[in-house]
Image (cartoon, rainbow, N blue to C red; front, side, top):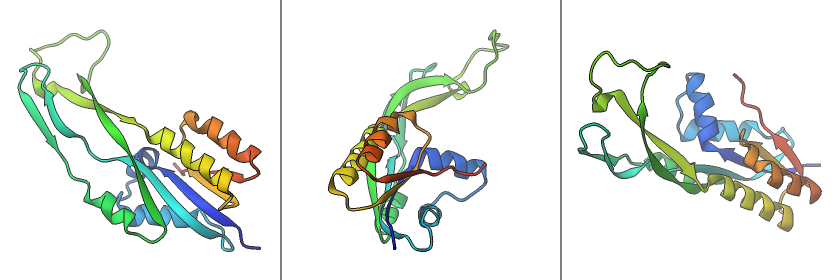
Length: 177
C-alpha cells in the first residue's frame, strides 16, 4: 500500500550541510534531496521548503559609522517554488549587529580595527513557527500518512510529538556528514 508523504525542509540546516559537503546549493539539489526522502512505494504529496530571503536593507558599519547597503536577490527561491510539488515558506532575516571575523581570547589587537575586521550577523525569524504550524495542519487534516522532516532544531520537538499523537508517522531525516 502506497503511503503519502510530506517533506519539510529547514533550508538553513540543509544549506550548512550541503556547503560542508561541497554541493552546489540550488533548487535542483534541494529537489533531489526531497525526492530521496521517499521510499519507492511512497507518493510525495508536498515538499515544503522553509527559509529566508537574503537581507535587504542598510546597516551602520561598526568602526567608520558609514552606511552599508545589503541588496541580495532571491530568484532561486522563486525557481524552487515553481518546481512540481514544492512550496516555499518564508521567514524573515533580521540584522543583529557585527562581530569580529577572527578573534582569540584574550583579544589583543596588533593594529587598530577596521570595518573589514567585522562581519554582519543575521538571525532567521519565523521559520520554526511555520514548520510547526504546517506539521499541525497535516496532523489535523490527515492529508498525508507520514512527514519527513529535515532539521536539527529542537524547537520542532513539540510539533513532532503532536504529529505522532495524531497518528502520523514522522521521519527525522539525518543529513550525511
